[in-house]
Length: 561
Image 1: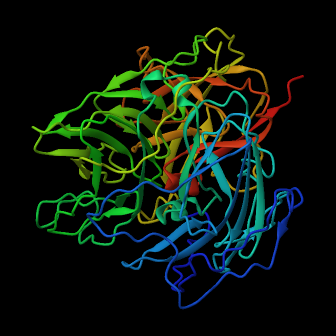
Image 2 (image 1 turned 180 degrees about the vertical axis):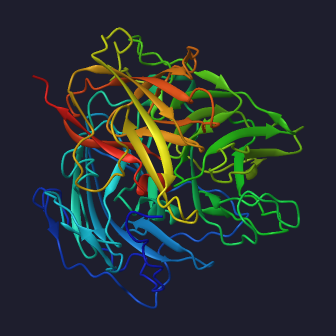
């Protein structure tokens, strides 16, 4: 069901860090070029990607921080096989840090020298590109810095033209805007046709813009815990996803993990849950990203079966309620947090008290529609307390807040109103087993599967604010993601949302259509005012099996006249 072929299941083992290549100081590579000839293989060595045991303790990824306005990282992209024989992908630094958490501040420069060490695979095609290679293999990649409001130009957050092939080193130079909202973002591979398999293999990490304490005073002094939810191919399925096995368990479409601790489906076995250890009596800031390729997360924290009220301080990297010009955030209380693939939530949690017998982080059953995946309820972690807890970085004292990106959005005039819709169909109606084609279409245009090199579906101008309504005309849920900008949620199914729900997002689910009646929809205020967002970039469904099969399009933002 892919636009291009799936990556090969490579059985070679790779070196963890001895072969890692670094090009040195920033500026060593010319814009849009690559350095070639890096060694890609070291046989007889263990897989470089993390392979943690089920039921293990949830530990945070390594944190790397900017200094003096700059973060420079050298990393290699590896593949290997885990103990179950599934293909893994990961980013490894020369120090051996796997998928590290990257910290920057507004106004910083982030430089990444990225070497592709995945062995050269099969030819997939060619593209017209001015950024890297023009020949694409199933071992190629590029990176997306999801949610960041940075330039879509070459060497920045460009997924339209960038191709990095096996043995190449490519340099990213990303200027973090001075008005970047502080919060949780993330990075992952995004080459069309290969995005789903890379994410299922674990090719992702967290990217944090520090400074949340300047807008949400409640987080000052709290330990901050990063939690990365991923999914992967199910290795223990005995019957079709969505059905009950002989033991009464609902079979998921995908296995899941938490900070690389697996939560695998095995028929007749209740998987041991990962363990989150908190310090007794010490509230924490949890920063959760759903970095799954396809799985939707709808989680609760249950103490003895009772859902806990969570103080949400940021969604999709933006402090809640902080964009009204006061530059003071306003936490919102939620007992359940729905997260599309790619979404993030940051909230304050109080650990279970001494009288609590059972404390769990649990994702609920997701109704994805008759054509959707099986995302059953699963316990993602047991929460325990101890005198010491887990060693975590602490949020510092607040400093002066800065001008926020979206200030004045509510009062800005609407330049254009647009309607778009998600749809899908069987590629060969005469053969029900044929692949499904996926589309995102401007109302009135002909549905067309995305392919590299396609012309923009929409052209607009920098500096404007638009209103978009996105409908779901298909029998399964879709997640609307926009690169380079955030949008403010205004309506769901034509009804205005509450002030607490009218937040800034870059990823939001739209439920499946029942087959009759009005189409489910969301209405959004789209902010194209930032001077950094000029050029071509994309919007798509962030269920990446859908994106890889055509549910993506290009928007062109022209310079302000």
